Length: 259
Image (cartoon, rainbow, N blue to C red; front, side, top):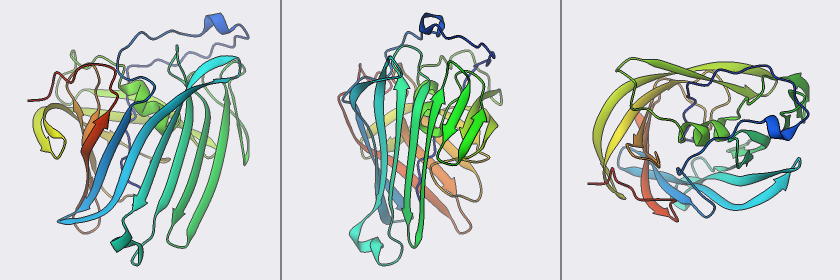
């Protein structure tokens, strides 16, 4: 039920560069997001709203000698749904301001009677992930599921053709996963927050997503510089669950895709 997935994509070629000099880190220029941005979604199953999800960038924090966006993602079931299946999930990541790669990731899952707490520090200099469950080798700039979404928002999709595949590497639990994303073209999408021209993609998620699912995922991102998620549709055993944008605040620029 922890839903909004998000998109593991990019034309990133990961190079195993071991550098102790922070000036060697990549620098990505973008205007996709900024401190203060907040994106709110309803999680709908048919005509029933089962929960609410929120992405937020409350502040910048210094971590490992670098400035990092503190990003939170929260999913809560609504009161009327709690009796059936109570959800209180929280994800946090610290994303390098200049390079858009993660330094730290936390996951706190509370779904029904299931709980899970996981944390990882990404030593991007020594290419090690030091987690609450062990230490593992990683490629430089490897992502967690949340930082991958923000990195994807900085990419240029304009050169892609329908059915083109792009990939990114994602670390979760104890290993690195290759993730392919299929570009499906453009569509006009209307949600509570408005009507948008969107980029449509299908991430082929293997592990470490922001929700448990069975079936396909399709994501619609605003077709502009911001690339905010407008809708996420997840196929489950019976029907679909849709995450739809209801409100946005403190964006870094203009939503030119809005109709």
